[in-house]
Image (cartoon, rainbow, N blue to C red; front, side, top):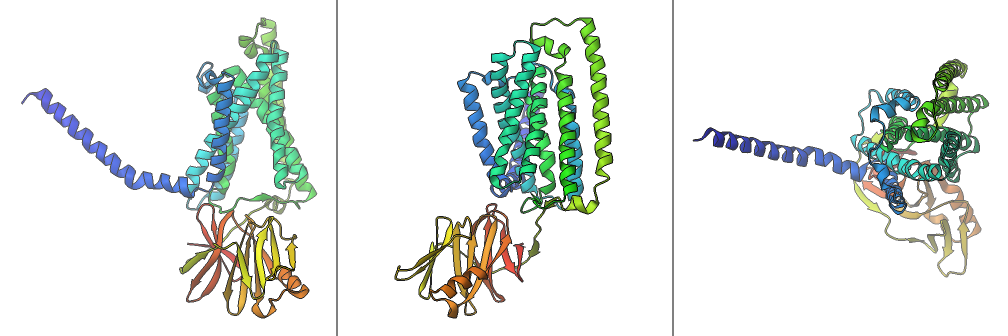
Length: 458
């Protein structure tokens, strides 16, 4: 047989073995991991939101005929990273801090994959929109000189920072929100400067994505993210302000170095003399010294803050694990009859109404109620109210249930609040040991209340 034919047959057989080997491995291992991450990942709700924003950004780029922004047309990726050293260094520091918090733990792979997808999508959506669209629109309209370019980048960075005012709508305190706006604005200016001098959108996408990934990684194993403590001490507030100012100075100095005349001249019609280049280099040396001073000052100041104050800066939630099986039931009904009283949710509040419909009271002090579930156990009614990341749970004796002022007062006092992850369904779990309140999160984790504690079901 011809040697060529033998080689061809051998090649085809090897290719087939590899093809089916990869198929079996992918189908049995990798596909399962990816499916679990897409379905159960902690950050999937945010990921879907960012996908919508990404599609909107692409639509706007198409309408404004700026899809060419997505093509590589400027400096190299490595050159862009060099110009973004301040972000890269801060990201590395944040990454090391996040890794320190999860060392020794088994990483939740589903959450990790969904975090990676989220970070990439955030980077693409926000950079396409704020740099590829907003900044380019402003620069094209007003950036005829270096000074105008700088103004345009500052304006677009400021817009990026002001968008973070929306965090206040979620209940975030004024000082934290203000500091976020300041830091995000300076970060936006730095990213804008990198994008302008590189004309490479993918560099700023990477830097932005890596920055967010490094910050969020520390909570990849948690069922519910930490929140800023609204009752931090004055020294911690001062530390937050000083830290924000320090990082903002570093970002702005980085932007200044990027927007020196010898870098910007390549894209505008201004000549740069040897004298100007020399002046730029001298100013760059001074700017770098300023960054060193700021970093040294910030770290020296950080040692003045007591350790216990830094640990109280955030409120973090942890849940014990419990291995428990049983029959699971979830809320299907929207209203429940308890003796001569009807309970249901209307206008995000619990409503107590007599069966004849003549008396009705809305308990407005229970805010943002989405669902109700009631079950009977040991001559008591157990009432669960879902308020997304808060669960109201109360137990009331059957004998007490009668539409009256006393009952209204009793039911109001019976509820305890529990901090839980974002909940999709509420119900109960029954087995030989008892009946327990049950919650199912949006990523299909199950939680029960036992011994007055929220526990995650293994």
